[in-house]
Structure formats: C-alpha cells, structure tokens
Length: 273
Image (cartoon, rainbow, N blue to C red; front, side, top):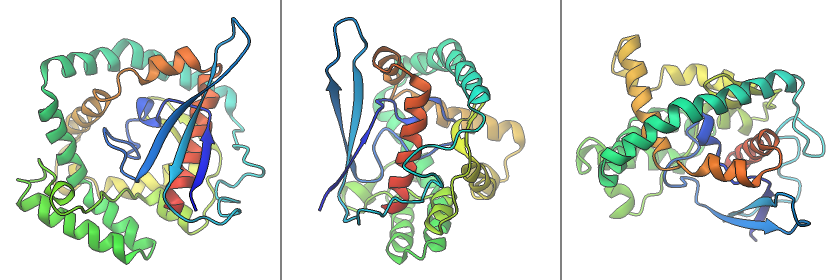
C-alpha cells in the first residue's frame, strides 16, 4: 500500500545546499509532492505540511532507527551553532546566490538550462553506480549503465535524456550517504554547514568518496575550474527553484526546524526507495 509521510516544510533542501543532489528540477525518486495548509487562528502564520507519497510497500517500523534517533526526533546537539550557520546561509542566498541565479534564469532559455541539468545528471552516473553496487541493487546498477550509455550516445554527451523520454528508464537517485544508511549506519548529529547547507555526520563522511567520483576529479580538472563547474551546476539548479525560500519564509514559523525535519525524513525515504 502507499505510505504517506507528512513533513512540515515546503522548501526542498536544495535551496541552501551546494552538494546535495537529492533534488533537481525534476524529482528523481518517483515521489509525488502535495502542499497542505493547516488552519490557524487569525493573525498567525499558517503551517504548511508537505505530503510525500511513495509508491512502495513499507512495513510500519521500516523507518525505525534509520536516523539514529528515537521517536523521530532529530539529534541536534549543536543547534545553536547550526542556527547561526542557517542565518549565514540565508543571507548568502538572499544577497548573492538568488540574484545570480535570477539573472542567469533571465538570460538563459529554459531548454538550455534543462540541457545543463541533464549533462550534470549524466556526469554523476559514477556516484549512482557505486552507491547502487554498495546496496546490492542490481536493477539500479543495470539502469545506471543503460541510462549512461543511451544518454552519452543518443543524448549527445548527456545534454538530452532519451533514456527517460524514449526508453522510459527512470533516473537513478543514489549516493554514498544513502548506501551507508542502507547498511544501518546512523545519521549522527545534524549539521548545518556554512555554504554547503543541511547534512549529517554520516552525510559528510559519504561526500568524501564522492569527491573522487565527481566529474571534476574524473576529468582531471584543477581546483579553480572544478569550482567553476560546480558553481554553474549549483546556479543552474537554483534557477528552477527561485521561489522556494520566499515560500518558506512566508509560511514556516521556524524555517530552520522545518528544513532540518524535512532533510532527515527525506533522506530516510530515499534510503527505503
């Protein structure tokens, strides 16, 4: 049957994360999103809940223990520091990232931005491939290989996605963090990193091997070109979600807690996908 997870946030964690590839202009995990307003007394900000419906069978206790917490509470021992980093990231987004992404969107046609997103998704195949192997998921291993071969050839180096449009091969959304979670490695403490956004201790550990699986390293790019490539990818991603933070600030009573809860629950959902 369908399992419904109600999450108290509109913002997808992409909004303030440079490195989290859990989201893109399309949802890669086959989930459907639905906003639900909760009535409040006049003068109060309404709560927004995000309903994620995952087309997958789950046992009632399948999420238990995945985040290393009891009763669904997020382990946040350095909340004071994390909140300061949240405020820093918010200002960075408002005064730097958002204006750049808005200008980029204004001068760049959507079809071109879509091609850029396709290219970076295809270039991230080694991460999807290795993570799927670590989880022993042969179907996703085969799908990663098939999609890469089709999109690199017929898709002209990954600029187009005939694997999805023509051959109906769904995108693979896997990373090393999810592989660690699959093997029951707990999240550890929640972290709000300056610039890089929400993650956990497990997420930080998972990103280390991904450095050596990313396109910058595999193409042998020096540090500055790699930063430029990553900046283009990030700006392109933000250009599809420019209203997300405004909606978060308008509707969420505590944006930090909302993002924290959403990030952990979404990661848990991806592990079970």
